[in-house]
Length: 337
Length: 287
Image 1: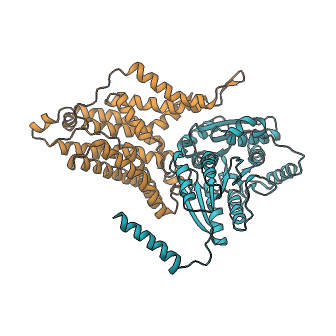
Image 2: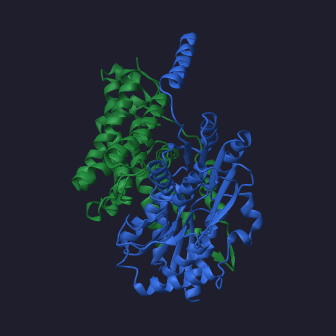
Image 3: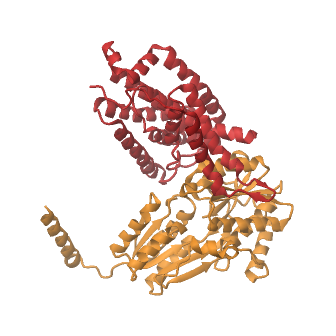
């Protein structure tokens, strides 16, 4: 029986090479999503959009895998590497150690890592300037709040999410020192990214303390926060993707993080032979961080607030306003994550 | 304080339903590790039917039906096919974890969640919480005051006696499982269309297992199990309230607060529970 399968295997190889010769092997891209999955309407959805766009426009071979547990990252990434994929993309800081472990074993394969730094020569890591975007939505929240009380709900209490929180809080209190902010985290394990009922309870708690605008950076858990906001007629701010459409009239705006842009760009660099390792920062300047305005939130985000937010955006871009960065405040913690 | 209480009640409700369902099955002598799966499948069914019909009552009934089918499968596997109860339960959990994403992808084009149900078509969470608080009394009456309850208890404690009396143990156990499945499903429906507005993959987050722990904690008796479920709901709610509270500028790190429920549970289990004696014939198959 093993002999027969070997025979079939070689036959298949032979047929593949000789009978169906391929003029040019398309670039093979493997995308490994974080546990939120491609339909989280947020972080992973954005990565999936970018990769799908590359597939449609650049003629590449794309395979997307979701991992059901944190321990599945290394085997999944290694499988891609063993099958000769040219570029393997790991979405989310949790994949840092997995990507680095495999990248060391396969120095000829390129890797893209989102949200965590890496110093390996074949790993390109993209870090977004989340604090700048969070500062902007923080000012929008404070300007829109009638009670002058705003909330933040994060997924896990990790440096990345603290960076959102610090930017948001600074932005909100920059509008007026009277503005109060409340911060809560959903959990201490990666379940926190997908626990909407707990996130909803946290939002309810914040609303009971007078919060009327809440910024949520907690993956799929945010759907629970949006629910609570809709029920209590408060505002919520989405994250990573443009989430305004999820609950029109409830979602004030979204802090959009251009994960799709980073994924698409890296694929196109790889295609043109320009891919290189190293850490890339993407922020307001690259338009990879922004706040979203479309027909779904046009009615609730007043032009006056938009004008003010754009003015602050200009100040950050020109360097007259410097947003505190949690990574710089706590250098040691950020690099260890 | 009020917020802590209401939050505890909201988080306890699904646990109470699942624990009452689990209690019935376990008292009948069937180990039900599959509560988690039944919660998931009923949550998904209720959300899907609600999206179609916009009728929350019909959705709850559909959810109960789906839950009963899954518990019926457990009954078939354990009572007819004489499979080990734990193995059957694990199989059902895996099936119920995998099926919703597949169907959700096919029906709604999104594997991780169903679309959101409009507010008007939601299940009233307040009513469900009220039902969850009264239900244990009904279960108490059923188990200790009715003929069917007596049969359930003897199916769990002395199936030989039941057999000698000419009653089919398989039949009693199957009925208990179907009823238990329907009760557990109330919790699932509450989760997806009462407390939230949609089904999300793995949204029960281990609730079925916590409910099972509550059954054991409450020593397989309805009223103590109710309080055990409320306690677990409280330990879920407490860390949320404690977060962000600071005293003289010092606040407790979130990670510490979040280990609190586990410490509390261990503490209470060690100090108060004493010996938990399960129904004697639990997990056994009558031949």
